[in-house]
Length: 331
Image (cartoon, rainbow, N blue to C red; front, top):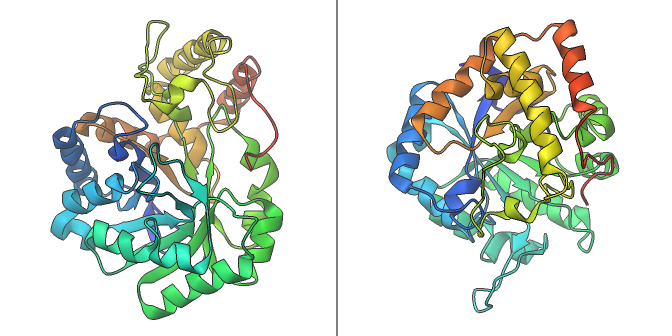
């Protein structure tokens, strides 16, 4: 495994991180917890240290399951979770709402106290705001993050999906070490709009959706059908219509061309896609959701791949043929 720092004051983390959204078992179809446990164990065995979760993943289930899976190995990892998305247990369904107020992020169902209980730990290595809440002053939210850090319940703080202006405002209020954003060959919005700001402010990037939410996994084809409970079945990928009935066939053609490049280079498509994400040093970790140990092992091949300028140019050309890409940041 290779490791990178979250800025100059953040923790050292594995360049490939374990994304735990599927553990919520609400948004990615059925999950085999036993096989997922094997994947978690394998990841730690091969040096993956960063595990990323959130209360919003399965209304707390992902945190609960991860806490059970880690057991005594929790001490061996950098545990990242989020705050600011909340729900009402009495509602049916239970839609999420943004609420980054002091009361919500400490004592709500998605608040810090419940998170620590679910994760079976007395501290988080990194605690971040999941999405910006424009209805609550950033000063209030950042004060809570700093207070949690000072109390020892949190070691580092960060944000997710924050624009350059929001980053500048919050960095003056809290020692942010990372901004977690979507980043992959199909989605370069944050690279265009925010990476330079992150570099300037000494804030690392955690890349989620590194395999384009499965599109770059190498396992999709024109016969692929997603479970009705899978959020991707609705066609949108963080406000990009990459997976709609209209655009998916064209994007699968793009994937076929990317697979040809990967084969010529001598790697799998996920390895090529992850190496592309990691080519920029501002990216501290590329998050990948793994359901089985074999996926963990395959991802490791990205670490030894350096993509030369000729191949990078070829990839840029291929991506010109993608459908449904947008330039505006998700808000």
